[in-house]
Amino acid sequence: MQLTTTNRQGFAPATITEAIQFSEMLASSQMVPRAYQGKPQDIMVCVQWGYEIGLAPMQALQNIAVINGKPSVYGDAAMALVQASPVCEDVEEYFEGEGTPNPVAVCVAKRKGRKPVVAKFSVEDAKRAGLWAKQGPWTAYPKRMMQMRARGFALRDAFPDVLKGLITAEEAQDYPQDELSLNSAVNSRQSKPANPLDLVAPPVRELNKPDIPEPEILEPTISAEPEDVVVVEEAQQSEVVVEPDDLAEANAMAQEIAQDLEEFEPTVVAIGYQLVAPGKDEPLGIYQTLDEWQDAYEAMADKISKAGKVEPRQRMTKLREFKEANEQVLNRIDTVKRVRTISGHQRRLKALGATL
Image (tube, rainbow, N blue to C red; front, top):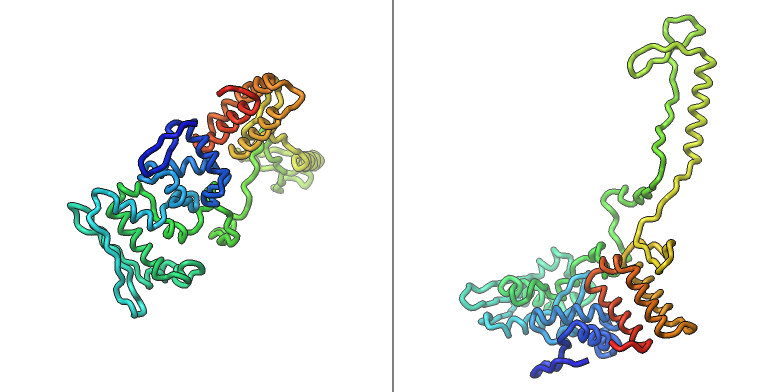
């Protein structure tokens, strides 16, 4: 792997292959933040974010955090990026009303050729947002957190082009967790749904269920006919004369059909992503999400590459055939997450003696 060297910024990968190897190397290191250890795909995305906003790879790893599935930058790094920008004239921070029950953090962001942007954040603002006396930094360092909140508002409004839409990590940490985020942890204290019916699981989609109408039990209505005759009213208001024995038999038949319907168990066809093996009709497994499918794919590819009784060249061929058989699903995986599969495939071939 050849890395490009730049002045005072260390080195950085120049191609996608180098980026993958670079990310894998950092993921196995103890010198990167714990959130990135063992996650080369996250490191690659973080480094790319750093390039876009002007941070070197190691600076990006130290200053970009993913909170609730969204990237954010720490307040000090945001200040550094803004002050390093040629469009920045000055950034001023101070407190108003110190010593009073409601001090206010103020940040004035001055951009060249434009009016200053003034952002304020007071104790009352923090109380309305449910942040004041909140366990954590808001209890230990309330003034610092107020300063970071005012700074984040001012810098985002005055220099959105410099920060590329990123918010400060201090602000992102105070937002509630996104329940739909694939990367957020499950909140142990989930709020109660507004509608109790939301707790009811949706019905299972059943395929191949025959379209059998509900049986209709005939309800007799007695008319002014002789006592041994019953008149049944139909939808078209036509009168049909039915003998009592015939009516009893019809009702019994309808009840029998209803009982058969209750005991009927339809065939359910599984829906999901199939993991297939070359030359086999039956899938190795069916998975509901692409993440589950990718985990199963990686496990099977590792099993093929480590089949000790098969010659290395035959194992390489089987790996290629396995990859081609599942190409359609592989192409549906997100580009960033696909890095894991690409790097894993290269690693297995290299271990078997292939020259990449």
